[in-house]
Amino acid sequence: MSIRLFIAIELPSVQKQRLGDIQSKLKRKAPAVRWVNPNNIHLTLKFLGDMEENSVPEVEKIVDACARESRPCSIRLCGVGAFPNIHSPRVIWVGIKDDSGTLKSLAQKLESLLTKLGVEEDGRPYSPHLTLGRVKEKIRGMSCADALSPLKDEEAGEVMVEEISLIRSDLTPDGPIYTTLHQARLG
Image (tube, rainbow, N blue to C red; front, side, top):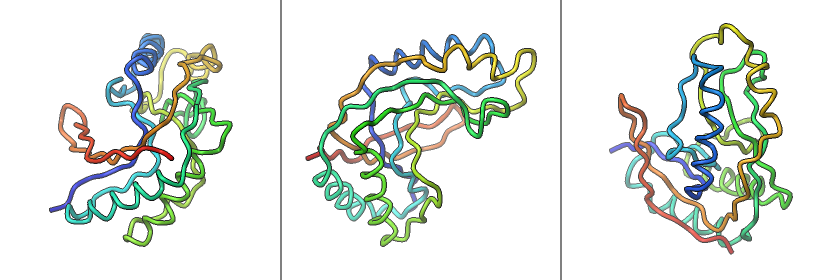
């Protein structure tokens, strides 16, 4: 049986609440956005997509190996922006500041080892961010740039990253349901 998987850093509830507060500020100005439930916001390290359920133990071994080789680090959640840009947004996000470079290194290690299991490479550099919402239609009234600009330096706090998680994603009409399958401590 095939299941949808990704590897991520789960956030403390205080940060999820803060991200929900940022979403609330934007909702009034950007109604054409499908907002992520704050409880589902996470920092993706690697999206695996659909994989056979019997491959989970191998993925867990890779997660454990990469975690052992990485040290805990502190990251800052700061700045609201959009991909590909604020003038023609498709994804609204909060940025991640990682002065240690741990996230990038961890994502690269995961990418390298997971390709041996047949997981496709992303083909673009790792850009850590937290997805707040996805734009479904052109934002009318005020531009997205006008809505996002006041929040470009918005802080959502600091997070101590001490573990990574392998998460199953079950898509439903009411949104995804995430189930943590495995966690590995850094260091």
